[in-house]
Image (tube, rainbow, N blue to C red):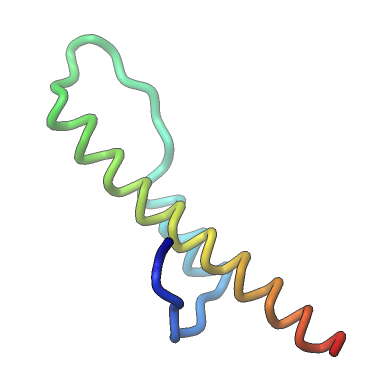
Length: 65
């Protein structure tokens, strides 16, 4: 689905991004634009977290071979 990442990620980076852009709930006073903007930030954090998990899994599997 997404192209292979060719740069190393680490859990400290993901943690810092997660702290900077935490998940949050919205009330009815928040505009759809603000919700979309926040969702975009979280989408990047989630994407990088998934890539980190793949990198860890791939490095683990390559050590088993």
